[in-house]
Length: 165
Ligand code: ZN
Image (cartoon, rainbow, N blue to C red; front, top):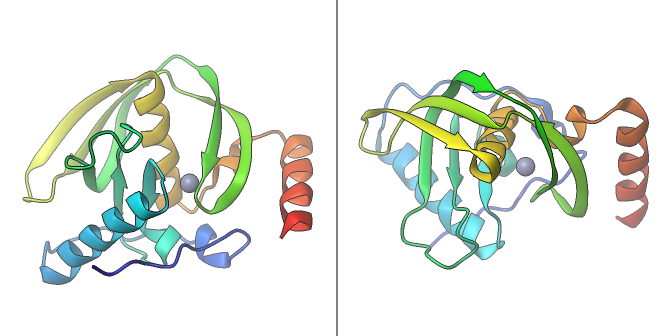
């Protein structure tokens, strides 16, 4: 089992846009497996490619908080095709250890992605899972959760975080 080292803010990797996956080859399957293991080992609920230095549009999610680690949601080339409502909720990120802030997200999203068998899937999520999906898809665009905050709040969080490190 190989684990990745998680990229920590302000690493410029977190600002880079990931590229579409065209081939579900051995490399990408292994990457996804290692990303899943890394997420569980870090007690995270989501991890996107750029957070481990992989600029491919892949993300893994598991919102069971370690209760059921056998069914991570594996998203390849995910994109939001419908969105509805707004709700604020506390968010954190493996690239910002011990840092949390309330972020406004869509309450419901309909996403489309490729699963690890290469099948195209449409999936609707609400509330917390919808939040995690939006957070991870943002990472593939080079966007972190602090980028969704007001400038004042973002500056405070940045300062606090960099001081702690
Ligand atoms: Zn994150």
